[in-house]
Length: 213
Image (cartoon, rainbow, N blue to C red; front, side, top):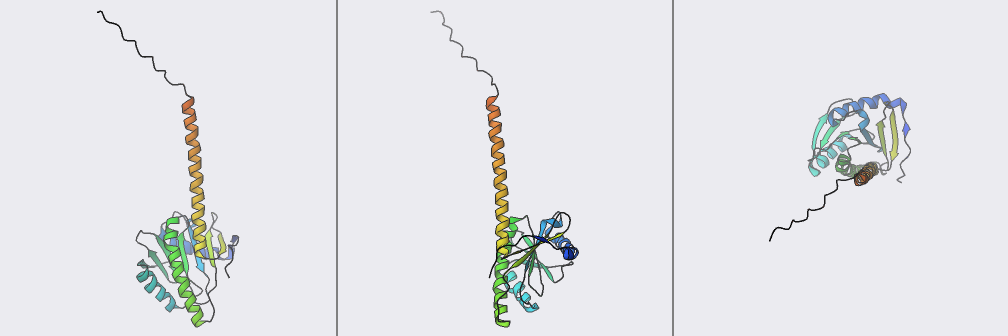
């Protein structure tokens, strides 16, 4: 049963391994710092190599027609760089306990373009695998992890990757709305100042001189 997103908490004991993972992903996702990255980890019952091979080859490459290239680094598992036609990128990491998506947290366009379709495909495959081989459904939450300004790992559970993307998009919309409102206030203030300034008076038109008849 899905549950509401939990409050964030710090995870000190796993910070250093995650810092190395984020640094590895940073090279491929080209962010200014690792604080710009987010990890979305599906917590599934058990996943084998065959399931990942089917997911990457059949769904990501063929169904979605995304480019897939191996990623090198300290990812704790086999990793892939996935790129769509608009050059949006994420890094997928294979774990025995479920798929992990490494993405740029502030790139809402990239999150919207890639995360929901990847999540949807993974959920369908994972659900079919879990019920067929294990007799039960997959775990219904995603672990969201990021690094704060002091390189401390922050973790939060959310019902799905789609819920995270929706929250990120809503936050971006709210921020943009605030910026637009601030600009509108500045423009209104500028108009008032301009209206209050004394303008040059236009001299009255000269009367036409009457010529001699």
